Image (cartoon, rainbow, N blue to C red; front, side, top):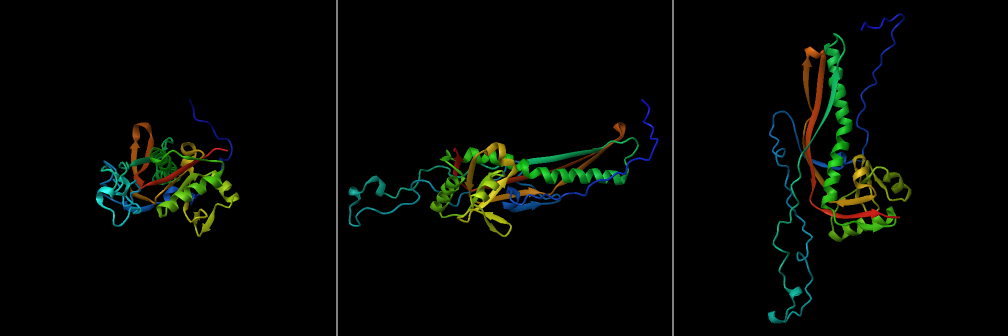
Length: 272
């Protein structure tokens, strides 16, 4: 097949400038990153993940109020009066495993594999990765939250759902995050459930909102409260390949990360 013949002036080519990741209320921003590895440093968390050791254990038997007479004999104590502690078991959550995300781009133009054009391929792969990775990580993270969460409390609307989680947080005496899909943000604003604290969105009780684009399908109408999230990740690496036989240049950007939490505090589902 012969190449098309251009009889007039060719069109002016324009590539829009790279766009930064613009969503400031997702999981990536809310997470405290414990380790961000670069170069050849060991990624000790990559093969088997990260095991959280719980500092706060809210099991029956870890706390109580002494209700027996101070002069009672041991034989007169009820089973609930004896400070036996919780059952002997592993109360720590299952290890959090790593997620490896990648983005692909190629240059395939007849005879044009210049350094400038190869650089554009690398830039596009990086940009695609930066825009897409947070959503992919949220999708995986949401599945883990559903596995760990208790049966959600039924709430007639978002106000009651948030109230339930705030009550659960207050009962533990801890701070944490409220995870919800992005499309609930407008509803939360309308219901005056969003308090702006600089760049951070909080519930009326002061707990941080995490509106994740990756939560849409997995969480649906559920909102889940967790303790603060912590993460480990490496830097974005770009691998290149020049395939002369196919007249193409390939760039793949990728990174691995782990995000976890100590506890799921509660869950609610909106069932109007």
